[in-house]
Image (cartoon, rainbow, N blue to C red; front, side, top):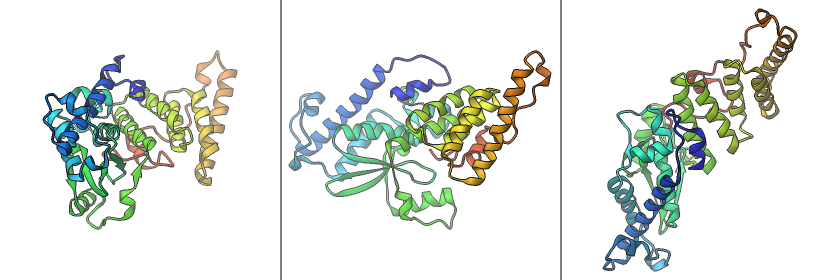
Length: 317
């Protein structure tokens, strides 16, 4: 949540995150109460009475069906968190603070709410890096289910997963173990950040896209693709000193010799430009155009070849 505030959304408001943290805690408390009610069946006077009941006892451990039903009841139904199908590409859908306010968001943003509530209740849940659509895997009493946070926490079996895969990867695609690869906490945050960045680039908000990448590097400083994208954005905004530094960081981490050589040439061109800038401070016309080989910092190029480590496609949310 603190990380979300770093970006600030497109409206630029400075927001106090305390109410949002309280809402996350409240979701977890409601889920705990729902699971306690489902497993212990006491005569509760209030929801808070149920919340104080422990669900950690092995005898009271909820079944996978009870866990899924509890998540559906608390997050999707009672609190109304759903995917925004009407305005999918709205930047607000990737801003966690606005997602909590609007109760609409992208799969990965909504998934974070589910993960937080589940883990606070001792329920094993992880994000799944499924092609084209972020999913969740929940485990209870030795059983697993795949759920979709975007569509009200519905469960997805092999047939539904196969259909989802084919809709994104083509009719010839078939389910493979790699499609169930779990996402680390850093992976999930980067995926959310990438959605904000792509939408910022599409809207022409280069400063916001730059800020998002800068903040992404706080949690993934060795991610060479982020350094490349940052350098390209700095160069496009005529911030040559910063572009030079970012590209140097990229070259230090890049293992692809061809790409490293190409960016090294950009670095040399930037250095020459900066040297000439210094020597001709009184003659702005003598300053050459920015390097052309850094690659345009656009949403489209970022999806294709702008980064040696692609983040995710536009709709891979």
